[in-house]
Length: 121
Image (cartoon, rainbow, N blue to C red):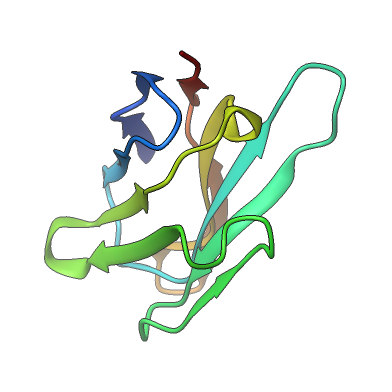
């Protein structure tokens, strides 16, 4: 069984920083691209950042220049460094790996349970 576990959320003042982690565990042959999403009550889940297994990255316009996504393939872990945080960044942040190879010809889509980020003074 594969699990994605996020950590690193919390309460931070505007202008502060947090680093989220998404650690994958279980029977994994490889992990493709990994996404970070966020969601606030009453709104659709928003794609924040993506990193491919080759290290290419993409960001939502709202976080460009402030957030950095990275990965450590040896640890099956992806990070989201969030700087210059704003109150509008407040949300539950979810890690998603849509192409986890769990067998030679089997890929599965996994989500983490989410971690709350609150930006408030």
